[in-house]
Length: 356
Length: 76
Image (tube, rainbow over all chains, first blue to last red):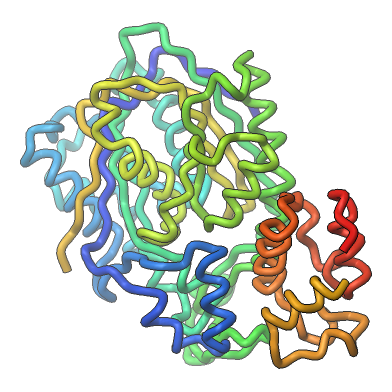
């Protein structure tokens, strides 16, 4: 499905990561693999450091910290927010929506819309699309898109497939109408028939958590995980990305009439270094135009990796400069989405840490 | 073939790859080993194996791996 939007822009972006940093070298002994194999994998996949929250920290804590930082530094006024779009797979509760929790904790005005979207790695682009749609309404002038996940709470520390890669993080993106006649292209694809490739089997209403679903099991690949934990079919996900993402980008750029060379930055979701390098090779994009350094520094935080990659790699440059960027997210659902837009002249673009 | 065998032995020293005709079924290579192998082959031969080719069928034995790199003009 293709989308086109006019006169919309990102006016500010803040990424929030936990201060606590873990190291793969320290965690390696938790996995049921020889160290030599893990070390080889470390080099290829980009396992190194990742940021995880404490067990009692939830999505609303990261979001409230980030928004309060913006209020305190006068980057955003509470009354300006007409809508909160929260994209998360790890809500504080099933009921109520976490976006309402954020609104309540910050005592924001009642005359606003709060909505939660359950999406993962494609969640930044999907959240942006929702924000743009909301901005078609006269009454909505500023949307705060929050991407946040604390998926470490649902990942087995003895699962080498997932644990070294994951990270917890949040981002706050301020989106509003643009005085310039900006044109933004986007497209989205969904395939729920492949939903089992990334799943947390237990904990919802289909299979409630119990003592049984909490039992760690060796599921045949030397990794120990419970049904309460994230399960990722690495081969299926890898092939999905390599098969679906390049034609999606080709279609996006084709719809916009923009050649690949005219894109300044390819800011893609950050599953691991190897997958991104393979994508760059296949798309014939110079690797320096496609940053792949988020997993090794922060871990994969699902829908937050794109804004995190923007803040970490471009940061303050986006306050003074302007680029044509291609965004792409792909994963859970399965869902994949991309967006071509100008990005720059931001009021703020930075990364902050939330203390332990 | 010898080079590929040496790479495989480096990844999984405990396995005897010359004695198996199906590394995947025999539990000698998992998906992460395939990634490590591809990364090494890319570097050694100066190629970039297409991501869509990184599927178990191409890593079952020495012949299928040789056939895979053969697609890139390499005769191991």
